[in-house]
Length: 432
Image (cartoon, rainbow, N blue to C red; front, side, top):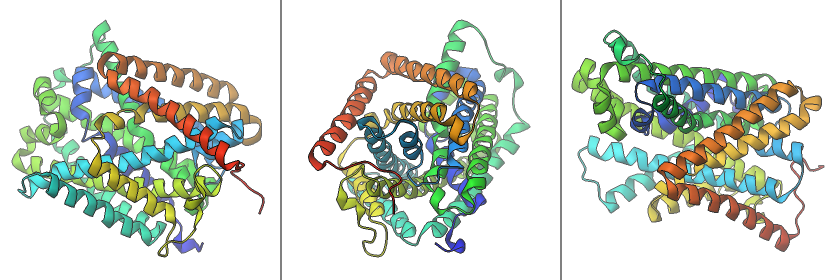
């Protein structure tokens, strides 16, 4: 691949930031406010710390192991070929497929009211399928086109949030932002931090595009750390402005469009419009980056033996087949299923993947670098996050709890069955 076709550091950061911000700040902000109350900014700080603990291993391993399989390449290097390794690859790819469908639905939910079109199954389906088709076509032109589009989308989106933060900062009522440290608020802060921890999961897309990046050994770690730092700053700032300008009960009542409602006290109807546009930009940039990362995973894992051989054809209408299969399955999800319950288990999936990445790094520190004791501490923290997440789901989303267990078990059975039938050897770095 020519250098001009590779992703720059700026474009890689834009891709990661676009996915992270699109994943939560607009869609579940109201949910976080209900859980953490005025401690929401503190919850974002805590979840950001969790993200940096995981980012340490991603950055260290990603600078040395260059593969679009990303974390699955790390896991294979760390624990070798196993049904678990293959199952994690399937889980990661499917999480992208479901996420794409989620973003398409999120875009449609904001877009139709904005253009005064009554939402119906037909109008919803047209917009959802059309959106996926547009970004599939964009991805057809390669990583450089994706990076350019992502850069401009993220700049526009961050500009909207920047206006929200700057305008709202001067009208914050400080007393509304003072955290509370009683038992109930501390419990709520932890629950919200665990929930929003997965809002940072977009930094993993940097490793999924490492084969397509300029100077990956240097730029992968930089892109990961820069993107997490930017998103953490944005999340905390937005939370402070929202909590400080809108009474908590009104913020919780607003639910899905909480930030648009929070902009009204200091920006009026213009603020509501701008934040709605920001939500549309968030969902499109997240879909764009996730479709690109999902396609890379589909092809990389298929090439390396985790998915059926049909995925291995390198060219289909001039592009990688994984792109089309990923987009096609996303269309099926968006049209045929209510993915709310399914999407809620993505957080569990990613926590499991993160834990195995850290375990792999722990075993590979002598080869690829890193502080072994620090990685061990991070594993301990992530295991705690995993059980805290399950506890939260058990208390407040029982169906998601069972769904997570079913999904994990299903991936293992699928991988085991495929290996049994195909007798194929899993090899992330085959000899050429």
